[in-house]
Length: 404
Ligand code: C2E
Ligand code: MN
Ligand code: MN
Image 1 (cartoon, protein in one colour):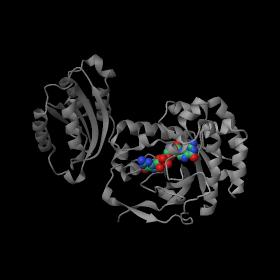
Image 2 (image 1 turned 135 degrees about the horizontal axis):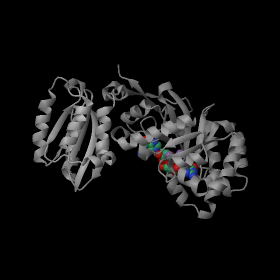
Image 3 (image 1 turned 180 degrees about the horizontal axis):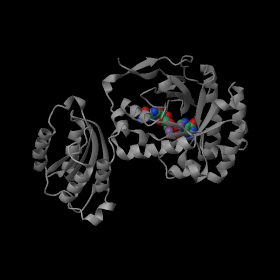
Image 4 (image 1 turned 60 degrees about the horizontal axis):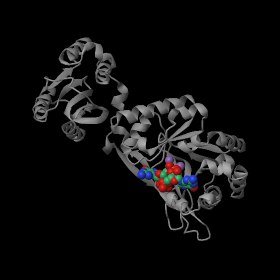
């Protein structure tokens, strides 16, 4: 199937001396063998390349480019399918914006392309080209270059008591995972993740419970999380717990129960944040709304969990605005490589800035992900990179540090 792939990248600074023409000549030969056509635009810092060809050969070439030392910060912007090539007989044409005015480049691109002029205004490929040609070179993208060797992780023991042994007199255990603010080297809260007594996942734990009892047990088990927090000595750190919204709606006096348990373990309601996932909020919104009011009235915080994984998206924020919003791991994973993911996260950042909602990025596993997210203004993170969940305790925190 005829595939068009667009990516943006930057010329590796150590390759600046190599002639661009030489690179193009080599690429031309390689591409024509693979039946790939397209254009390459260069503005002195950034490349924008359009690749057209069979899906297999385009994807294979793109994977080579991603590991090519001459390119850095390679980000995929678009992958689409179409009935015909836009740049058919041109092999791989280079347009150097340093040597030619934007207007003249644009005219030449149009002349070489098969695009009918009246079609260009709706064509995404053409719009990517046009934007690249006409926008000023951005300093911000220069800043986003990530150099792995410039960073190292420094392990630090969390300022809490040692992990406890298996708690045999309880129906469940909890694993704690910190949420951190690396720029301040600060733990902002710890999330309590439920575990079965055999160490099983939350899913396994709830599967073993009869559906009639789920809400009551979901609510009541949180007392063990507060108890663990007290015994580990979390001090004035915050603790986040996960709840099904229906556990607050269906169990009589649920909020009162929580408030009592919080004070029983010498915590304050203001220290507690309840995490609820996007889809669960929507499915029972009207009933849940009164529970939210009670929680807020008691001083307890609220976070939307797994934001972006459900079907509500940003429109959820027209209905209510939580204190915190946690961006789902699916969107975060490999964000440094994906244009669509980057665009979505930027819009979430902009929304939450206007609404003063604190953002947390979940499931950070790579320094590259963290680095990109910090560059667009996200400060709080949770993920294996910083700290893994630890049963009945809080594990070591790994802080990113400049290597020299
Ligand atoms: P969640 O609240 O989004 O919690 C984060 C999950 O992602 C945890 O899985 C955690 O171990 C995992 N995680 C954290 N960092 C990373 C990372 O860098 N990479 C990857 N691959 N995973 C990471 P866990 O503990 O299995 O929890 C799964 C879900 O179960 C939770 O997702 C939460 O929605 C739910 N859950 C946990 N405890 C409770 C509870 O007490 N009540 C209810 N109703 N649900 C709970
Ligand atoms: Mn959660
Ligand atoms: Mn989550």
